Image (cartoon, rainbow, N blue to C red; front, side):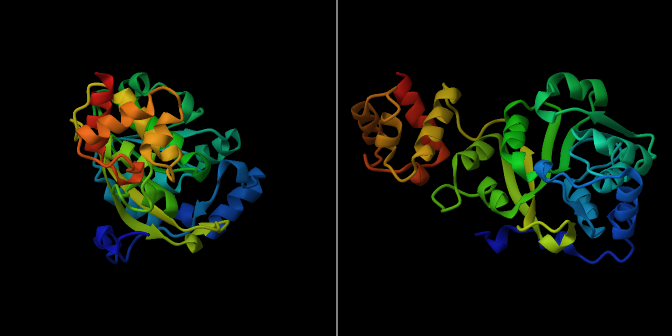
Length: 302
């Protein structure tokens, strides 16, 4: 459940003169008719029909002409349209080749490049300098819901230094998980991963009625500002995240049993390490902070 106090409702202030032709139902229907395009449910294609939403997303990303913007899954380009008017350069990665001729028509901007590729196959350390030089880059996207978590984790774990922030619209339930603090019902392994790599916050919710076709779920826009330095120090980050994944993988079990059942570390050793940290032997993963997981990983590495 979203804590209403963390939503920045100032982003919803009235702006009377927002226009975006790519958010008009008539335009979308005409493009689909002329290009014989059908929505691909498998790729999670739902197009925005409220011009305020892409405007708000780009505004909340804080871009100007000195920034580059990386978009994943532009659809017909409604968000790209706003990015092109604010960022210095935009690279939009689209996996569906059926959308390429539509994007060639809808985005007549000199500062926009469309790349036909699967984002998960791209090397960001090569791609970003090649496309944006040394300019700071923000990821701004309406992420396909079926692959949100893999995309977010790839961005966080493989972020070049010039990638500064990630502002994405995701399913509301996923937004709650991305931003959930430890010890809450919504927290999970990805919550701690996001906390380690970034400072996240939910900006605003987006009701399903703002899309065509209308999805069965609500959405929310999340901004994650990447950290220069992690909030905790850990000698073996890989081990720390392994403990987190194992603990949350069987979250109804105690951490001792959830991790011990994997067979890598004896249960008695895990329990002793928890006691050294003055934590109860029957603690569950969801009750532990990132700092406690880091300290546990260091103890078990000795």
